[in-house]
Image (tube, rainbow, N blue to C red):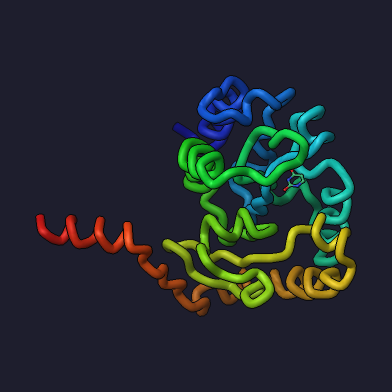
Length: 210
Ligand code: URA
């Protein structure tokens, strides 16, 4: 199946998904939007009120700021793919639960990434970063390009966080400004080596017995 068709299929599945309790607060699912062959994929956290109404990602104040950041590097939102780790609105703007992120990412986001095959993934905020680079501190690693499971990933602060905490704005602007160069030097990015949790160590031990 072609990438464009895969994305359409995923959007259809997301619209009727009942795999986690977030579907109860869904008015419109937000599968994400952008070209099927986008070079950059921005991945946020979860939608708020406006996104839930419109079925589109980043259409509120954070989205306006994201568009400004893109404009400063000569890009428009139509050129990039914008999505979230969860596709339905968490009630009362609460944070998505780890199991909700895990379910939604494994069912939908992973397939979107495979289909789009972007040159770089920019994670916006802690939840999105945590999926790719678990246990990292965003204040320590933001703006650094890393190869994660064969993909170039750059963690950045969430635009909404920078709107609430203006001291984060310059960091976010600087990280965006470096994006074109990071993409150009993608091959030089260091590998992120995942630390194995005790469970994963046990899984690896069991696997190595076969
Ligand atoms: N914040 C997000 O993380 N995603 C959106 O789509 C909107 C706001």
